Amino acid sequence: MRTIRFFSPLALLALVLASSALGSSGTASAVPSSGASAPADPVLARILELGEKDNRVQEHLRILCKTIGPRLTGTAGYDRAANWAVERFQSFGLEARLETWGEFPMRFERGYSTGGMVEPSEVDYAFITSAWTPGTGGPKRGPALLEPTSEEALEAMKPRLAGAWIVNTEPAPPAKLRREVREACVAAKAHGIVRPGGRSERLMMGGNHQVDEEKARDPVQIQLLRSQYDGLRARLDKGEAVVLEFDVRNVLVPGPVPCTNVVADLVGSERPDEFVIVGGHLDSWDAAEGAQDNGTGCSTTIEAARLIAAAGGRPRRTIRFVLFGGEEQGLFGSRGYVEAHASELPKTSLALIHDGGGSVLSGLDTTYAMLEDFRKVFAPLVQDERFPFAIGESDGLMNSGDSDHAPFLKAGVPGYFWNQSGLGYDRVHHTHFDVFETVDPAQQERSAVVVAIGAYGFAQLDHLLDRTDAEEVEPRRMGVSLEGTRISRVSGRGKAKEAGWQDGDVILTIDGTEAKDREQITQLVRSGGAKKAFRLQRGEEVVESTIDWGDENSEKERGERALRREAWLREHAAGPAR
Ligand SMILES: [Zn+2]
Image (cartoon, rainbow, N blue to C red):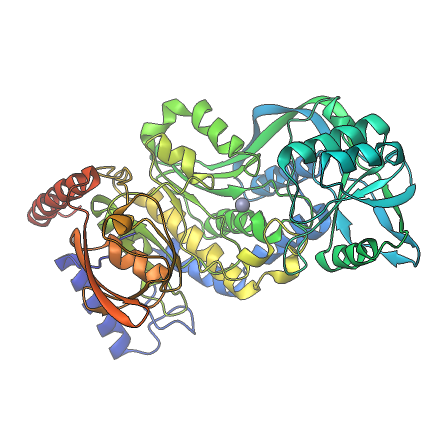
């Protein structure tokens, strides 16, 4: 996304005022460690103060992770969490309820599991099974057989499959053969299949909720820690006779199972039929506690509601706190919300979704027509050195499609995924590492305040946000895969291919600016003019190359937007203050 900072005269004045307050008095703030003056609105000042002295975001997260535990959609864990969240919102004085968006065919309950190697030596295994996969029906012991890698080998193995554990090979055999092995396992009543976990000893979680009674008879799939799989493989490769035993007590019960979102309203005092939405997804995968994905987003949402209510906030328009279900299976809860609330969407100012884990919410990028409102709403944070918060400008609102903001964007509602470093999140999400202890309380506490300030601020504006030019503009692409500044691959079509770039080229500069990493290169390419001069290192030589995106439709749109932006800014600078 393009990040351009410009200041209107009003914003400049605000900055000057803020810095003079800072210069004249070290005690201007209501909060001791803050370098900024307290916001004029007493509710905002109180939110900041409570956020500092009595922040309960980690209390909510602890209950979600430790008392309730994993919250897979359509399970008792999810329902417990949803009912708890409704009560919690109600205890702050909000109107809260469950809203059903659909149903899943079967109810899944993950059971107690143990297993390991029994012969030639005893080794306990750390493993998981995918969600919506069946149990073993008691402890099942049998020989470990290495997955056959040819049709002939499969035929030869068939008589030995009954009561065996099949250990997947790597690299995987052709998909067709793997499917045949699976079918043979079902036919012969093999105990199940054992496969390796992810790199860095991660057990990766997933599963297909579209299970029926036939699929529920599929062989059990055991995912082992990578190192334990390697140990097992080493024995099998040497021809050792290995016996495994697993007892997996997963249960699948025929449904249908109703699936819900939690919806809680702090009803607006002046415009109750206008909405500001903040939220995250309540459902998680169930390999661990769903702490960073997405207990963090739920707990900041809940704490934001508490902070605003406790600060005496009576917003002008309704602030709606939504905890979505079914996000991990395909954004089902947010899609269902958008469908069910279609008539409210024109009066839904925006949706702010926190789903990037426990690192502090550090900013938002928005379009020119909303920029001034964003600056106004987040001024208390931007001016406060405790919050590393920045507002950036973007061409349009990019729809990454990967969380609950996406259905809102698709329906024309400004939908946002907060900027975050993602540090910590990338390592743990969807794995058995995603537990409460990986979350930094200090960053979470800041994030809860960020959500509260944002929610309250947008609900207090004189107007709904201006959606002019909010739709996504296709970003400029080079058509390369980058590892740092090195091009690992030039794709078959695209600008780089046309310009004669080669695999292994290293980008040195873009329009004279030194290239640093992938993120910065992407940012440089996407900002400014449509024609860029590159300097590349190719083996011993340095190559000059120019790429021009000027012939693309998106550039025409970008150019038109730039003109509309200028006109819009002129008009709003001349007109009455908004
Ligand atoms: Zn998530």
